Length: 318
Image (tube, rainbow, N blue to C red; front, side, top):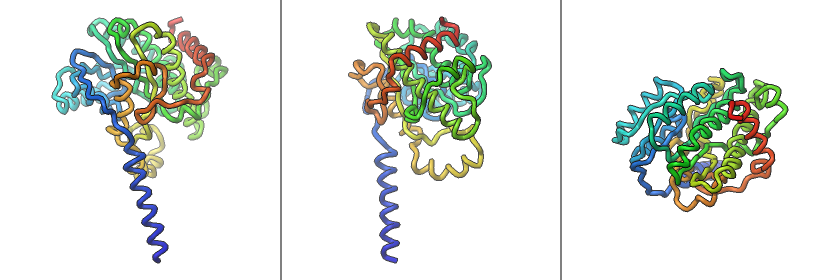
């Protein structure tokens, strides 16, 4: 009995330490204020996007909530205005799964907003399917939509420099690979619909995010725009809302204890957005508010350039 109690005590102790040290992680320490600066946060009606937008609104930024759902976006708008005490928060509809919507958003934004200081490519989706343009859903939303949005807004970012582009990727990019044959033939990173295949395609799309940032930094050399990609941590959010309801129920106790909440999960995004002195790290990947080394495939110059050129063709920029 005493041995059993000891084992139980050790397990509880390890779980407690893991939750309060590893799960909690580092926090953004910047005290920067953003009065007079404008920020776009995609996918900011829920999860870490909403908590990121809330923090930036509290710092005085003009925050554009770029979300697909008008109903949920406007609900988030009212909540952020109320809790931040700021009236400099605006909802603008953006569906990253529609190239037409991305172009319409950019056109409306550029006509109505004189500044853009920070673009946070936060939105992400975890499900197979096709966008209205015939692209693989995760490739289209997680990468191509943000690729087009960033390119359409780059001139404004350059005009308002120093400015930043922050793209939320994931640790899962380590397990990804870019199948250019599949992309050229099917406009998708993969075609399977099993749980493992869906996870693999999601990982591929997150590798696209890191390679996009790597190549973008090269194209921004000589400007006052810097860019960063990041892993926010394992987040207890709505990303898996399109997975099996049974799986969601089974995972709920684990995610509640062992995953970050959205406030903890937005800290690396805030670090990349606000921290002074990281300009020389443009193009790099961050985790836990710290720059990290990546595998060679995530900084492959040839693959990054090939992905950029393919992305230009697919969204009509070439």
